[in-house]
Image 1 (cartoon, helix red, strand yellow):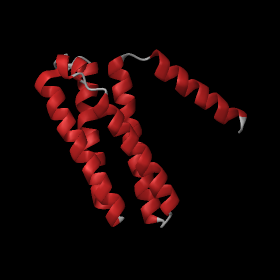
Image 2 (cartoon, helix red, strand yellow; image 1 turned 60 degrees about the vertical axis):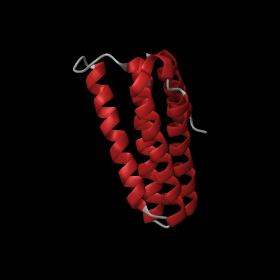
Image 3 (cartoon, one colour; image 1 turned 120 degrees about the vertical axis):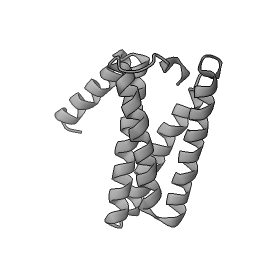
Image 4 (cartoon, rainbow, N blue to C red; image 1 turned 60 degrees about the horizontal axis):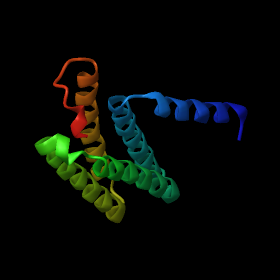
Length: 133
């Protein structure tokens, strides 16, 4: 591994270790979107290893988002987010079975919408309900 890669990985770990919950959620959404874009790229180039690797990474991020929901504090918002995450995971299973980018794009778009809403909240433009997620 090159020195630049090592430094970048150390920076990324430090960034994740020092951000607040809202920023961490945003990083997770952005990471899942990135992985889905790379999975789609794998499909386009017929690189099934790339597709499978990045699809599974996106699924892991979404599953982690789902499992860390605080239903006690989040109430209905947490319930609705869980439904949405399950929907996304189901779509990604279909994407894998069909080797189709349509579901990848749909899930990436949904993640982008949620990330945008969180970004607005973090910038003070929306309700302070980050404890739900």
